[in-house]
Image (cartoon, rainbow, N blue to C red; front, side, top):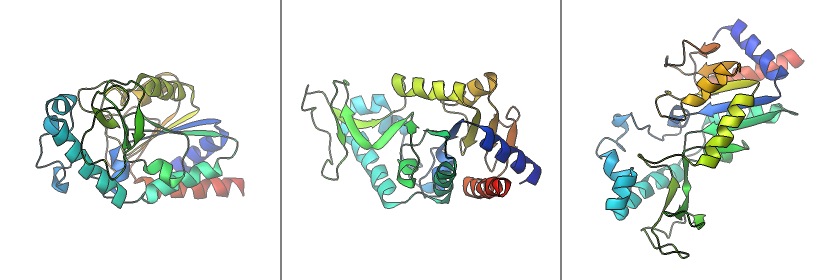
Length: 251
């Protein structure tokens, strides 16, 4: 990590009033949550995503989708936010007088558990259930709910409140994410491959609006060439070093 870049980014953080952190599956990988493209983890390599994680699969066989997502929920519940999540929470705690918004593609809830707020979950959450017909019913996904059941309000199927393959994002949540991205003074991208649309458009829109974009990823991505700073690093290492640099500038 280049000290000159870190010093410049720390200065931008200090000057910014509105900061966005956009995170993807790579951030939660260190917690042991497998990414969709990492078949070596075993969670995805023996299933067809169209059968267990798509809206078509849910409509064909709700019990199968429910069962597989319940396995994922149990894995998420067994693991913890990692050092990257904790470093981001410390950054927010140090940014007094600023608005720091996390926009995440992840459904694990680890940002909130680590202490970040607000968190816009553009792909929903594994911890909540809702009515398939969006009649207004929602509930926490309790351990006792081991199979699909009819909505107590309208009778439609109840399902996990996350975005399945083939579904549109929640318009209200994504509109809020877009607004925060366009009006930010600084936009961080962490642990995302920028291949899942339309969420991957957020840093592009921010860049076009004149917002400085900082990418933090161990590997180059399609965003690397256009980001103002593209840092080859993990989230924990980078944000820990950034926090120390901000303190040094303030000292």
